[in-house]
Length: 323
Ligand SMILES: [Zn+2]
Image (cartoon, rainbow, N blue to C red; front, side):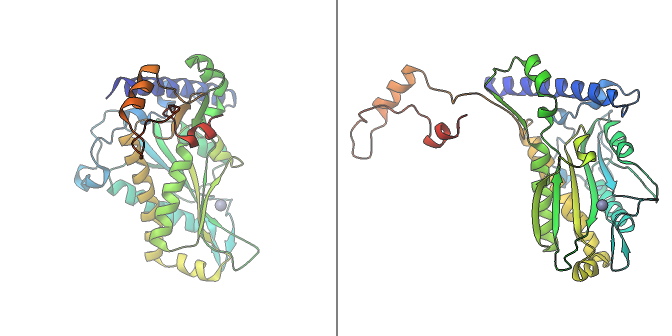
């Protein structure tokens, strides 16, 4: 790891720790949190236990050797008194449960620890679902739903992602890390997770790709500490899609596509500990005068001449994109 990368990793660890603390304070105020140790709330992707390629984990080695287990929360939408939407004789809560159970099995076979917010036809309010997710140091929260539209022709899959985490506690994080006023703080992990899931699930099902969408209006996404997504697996109002959802083989493909996306995301995190977490400086870095004179004397132009005015070694698009 280079010195620069190390600094980045340390900064990132600090960032996540501070962020976790801020979220804990926030949730405590809202009464969503019982007596949970602060350390358990930090979504510490930085110390991911998945040091071996996830696909290569054999079912018999499924139990993580880590003393502190980490989980993926699978949330079957609705349940109990809340049936969700309905169409073509199908009630959403029953079908989200089937998909969630298949997803649970698939993820466990891949060596992940999984916890479900409900295992039966239980009534859970949104705060209770969030509380399950925030009760342990989880990597991810995935909520499974089915869609409905007044337009019977509308079909397809869409995935909502939670808003940038760091931004939730931006003021505190900036103060703790002494981030310069002009620098941009961002956490796009939920969005990257949503994009990975959307891409994989539409690939294996050939469903209409309705894309990844900002789910800032969705309570469960807004209040989850870990990267969180809500996937709408298809429209019960569409006769053709409802017919597909009736088929066990299609449900299995839906579940495996979601699991593929999750695996892809966690593999990316394994390669880059701060995947999706960024601190962007106010201005692009300008090389020192020595570097400039070196590049001016060693890199000839296509015509073999030296450039009249040395460039600053910064791509034009970077300059344009700088805030
Ligand atoms: Zn729903």
